[in-house]
Image 1 (cartoon, chains in turn yellow, brown):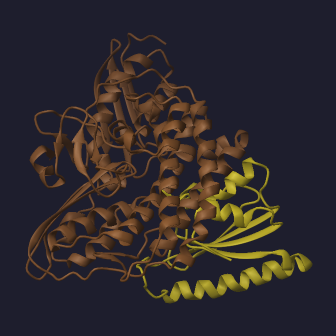
Image 2: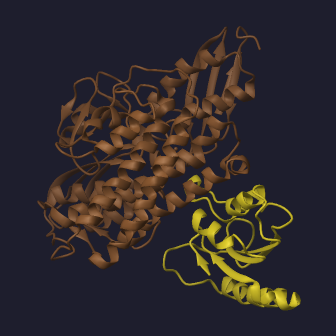
Image 3: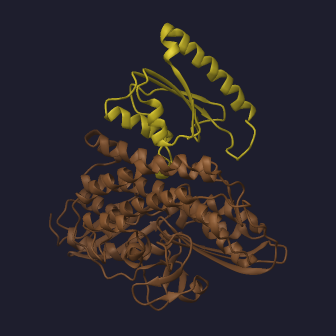
Length: 128
Length: 432
C-alpha cells in the first residue's frame, strides 16, 4: 500500500489494522542511508520527524490522532530512511538504495518473527 | 493579572500556520506599544529565478511556492501569460479550471476550519488533542477534505502540486465518464459541508468588528475565482491590469515578506471576509440561505468570524463543482496553442486566502524578463498587525500564556501562509 502521506487517506489505511509497518523517508537526522526504527505503538514519533508543514499533516499526525482516539493498531513500527537528495525525478543515491534493501530484510525478519500474524501485516511506504 | 504593568508577549514560532514566523507584542500601562508580525522564513526569490525561464514554465514553477494553494499560482500565472500572448480560454476549458480551483478551496478551507482554527475556539492545543473529544468533527472534516483532494487529483494529475495545467488549458482533459463519478461524492460532500458549517456556527466569537477596506475580485455573474475587476468596500473599482497603479509593496525590517498597501490609503483586507462582503449576491440561493442560518450578517467585519465564511465558501465550492460536473462536455482540444511574443500580462485570481496577483513581461522568444507575485498573506500582514494593536488591549486581563494563545488565534483568522508570503510565523509578547 503506497500513500502520498495525505492525512485522511493515511487514517483510512491505518484504521482497523492489527499491525502496521510503515516505511517513510527522513531528512536531516543523519547521513544519507541511515535507517531509523521507531516503535510508534509505545510512544509518538520524534517531533523532528513530524511533517514540516501544517498543510501536509502526515504519518506522525495520523498515528497521534488514532492514539488519542484509542484506535491505534496494537503494533506500529516505523522505519525511516535518511535521504540524500529530494530532486523531482532524481535517482536513488547508492547509500539510500542499500538502505532500502536493508529495510526490506528487516521488515521481512520482523514479520517472520511474529509468525502467523505476518499475513495480516501491511507494508506501507509513504513519501509524506 | 494587572493590566497596568508592562508585558512582553513573545511567540517564537506560531503554531498552526504555514511557514516560519513569530509575533512580538509589547504593552505598557495597559496600552500596546509595539506589534510585529515577524516573518523570518528566508526569502525564496521566485521572482528573480523566473527571469530567463520560458513563459510555459511559470505555472509549474510558481505552483511550488505553496503546497496547499498551488492551483492559485497556476491559475494566476496562466491568466497572466494568456493575456500577454493574446489567448482567451473559454467554454469547457474555463469550466475545468474553475472546477480545479473549487477542489483547492475545499482542501484548503476544510483544513484550516477544522484542523488549524477550530482548536482555538474549542480550547485545544491542536486538532489531535481536539479529536479525543470531537472525533466525529475531525473525521467528517478529513473525509470532506479528501473530496477536494479527489477533484484536484482528477483534474491536476495528483492531489499535491498538480501537474496538468498549462498555458492555454490542460495537458489532458477528462472524459465525461471520468468526471461523472465525482457527482455522487460531491453530493455527500454538500451535506458534510452543511454539517461542518452548523458545527462552526455554534462556536463563540469575541466581539471585534473592525472598519476594514475589503478588497476582492468581482465578476458580473459568478462568485469570483479566476476573473473579475478589483473592487473594494471603499470605492475601488479597477481592472486587474491597474493593480500596481493602486497597490504598492513596502519592505519593513521585521519581515522577509513585503507588506502591501493601497497607495495613500494604507492597509486593506483580502480573503474570505472580503469576498463574501463584496460578492454574496453572486452566491446561489442554497449557499446564501445556509450562511444566513449560520448567523452571518450582511456585512461581516469580525475577523474571528472568517471561519464561518470559510465554511460557507466550502459549501459554495462544492455546489459550483457539482454544477460543472453535471454540465460537462469535453472540449475539442485540451488546450489552445500559444505562440511566443513580447508582451506584458496580468493575472489575478482568488486564492483561498485572498487575491493573488501575477505580472510578467515577456521578450520576443517568450522568455520572462520581469515577474511580480503578490500573494494574499503579504497583503494581509499590515491588517493582522492592526488587528493586534486593537485586540490585545481588550485581552490584557488574561494570564500570559492565554493571552499569547488569543493573539495567535487572531493571527490565524487570516489562515496565513508564510511560505507564500516569503514567497512567512513565531509570538513574542513583551510587557514592560
